[in-house]
Image 1 (cartoon, rainbow, N blue to C red):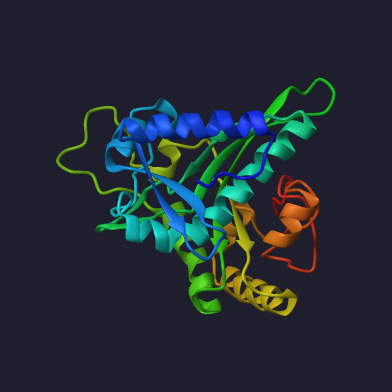
Image 2 (cartoon, rainbow, N blue to C red; image 1 turned 135 degrees about the vertical axis):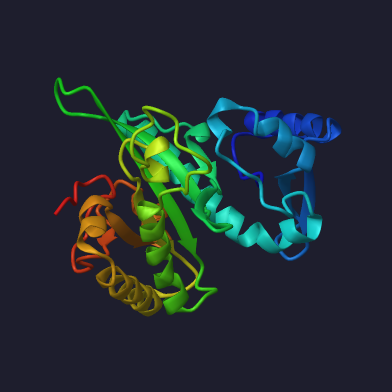
Length: 270
């Protein structure tokens, strides 16, 4: 977490709170020498253990090296982009009269794929959308993958197959099933009423590079089975468009039809 420009009073309040959390051993900091001596704060192992007791973070597992200063320094560029995107969604929800609070945005939620493998999205967030007229509220959920062009397009596209594996993963039962337990179901159904949509936010490259990576994601989507593509909307957008126009703007390209531009909240059921 970095301190960004804000009204003077709010910045001073934030600084005092950070100092208090640091004194209690909950957070630590690194200074970036080539970024105007920006201080970046990160959670310590003790802080992660305390935070993991919150109901909002019950599915969160901190990275293995979360409390390591060198690891924090190496992750900071990626983490700051993820934080900027989170802030954009929270601010956009406030403008629209929707609900997406800071604790509705949960980084790096662990999802088992079995055999010791796991899928850990950059973030999972919950978003409550105010429906039109008297329809009340609708709840949306999304996984977020931030790509800074640090991996090849094929490796990026391979993430789609990982999400399809999660969509189909049924945990192996240990021992005899309990009477009345019924047939085993996919693990994700224990957490979500519907599988969250998947949002790829692309950074670190220009328009041609964005098009190239969207094309790779489109090719990866074509390898998925029809039921997964029907049930799980997957979209991609450049971070520049998301931050400039707002996440709810029609800046997202469906991976099944990247010629379109839609809002991430649009229904894409086929």
